[in-house]
Amino acid sequence: MGTKLTSLAVSRHKRSQGAAPLVMLTAYDTPSATMADKAGADIILVGDSLAMVVLGHPDTLQVTTQEMAYHTAAVARSNPEALLVADMAWLSYHINTADTVTNAAQLIRAGAQAVKLEGGAERVPMVDALVSAQIPVMGHLGLTPQSLLAQGGYCIQGRSSETALALLADAKALCHAGCFAIVLEAMPAAVANMITETVDVPTIGIGAGPGCDGQVLVFHDVLGIETGLRPRFVRRYASLHDQGVEALAQFAADVRSGQFPNHTESYEMNPDEQMALEFYDTNHDAEAL
Image (cartoon, rainbow, N blue to C red):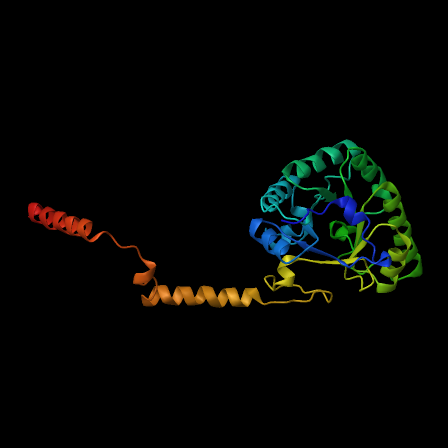
């Protein structure tokens, strides 16, 4: 058993200081968390992406704090060595700081070691409140899926010098407020590099180029379980959807042909007990006549 990674250890994990890139994967239940941890992930994120890849919603706006806590608890039961971070649900940290802390506490009680929220300088009061409550916070800038209505969909952010500098200012604000790491999503690599070189905490990229201090992808995307929209930054390392359908179809065929189950997949009775049972059946049938 190794040493469980902490948010403090992650906060010091900068490639510019010789650290290896951080690996973050999403997970939503005990089996997926166990797989991610055994694969060597540094951070496991219970992402609000579960709304889409697990619960079947069209976007991340539909998932609730209660659902996030439920799945966080399932991941925590795997007792991973990786740092366990849980996403805060849409509108669970937007209204006031009191609600923000209360909602984050549900995720911590469920087993999370830190929470992640989206947004820049406008989220500083929430980050301040969480840090004051001793709850570690991971930031998230760039394409923020919970802002898809305001951003006009899933659009690349920071393509102009003005918006790039705004992202840099947001990253500085989050870092100053106490975030221990910042996810950078769907932005030009040059912008992510500028932010990574400027802030003292590690950046974790997703569609932000190779210069970040770490990388994150969704579990279902990496394994090819999700077969819908495939952003250009997704690299699939398996095709488990196709393999799974093939295996399930073979099971169905074996059932229908009578090949499953066979004798080795069935249980036998003690011969004496089976004879007694057959004797009872014979006599019972005779009495019935």
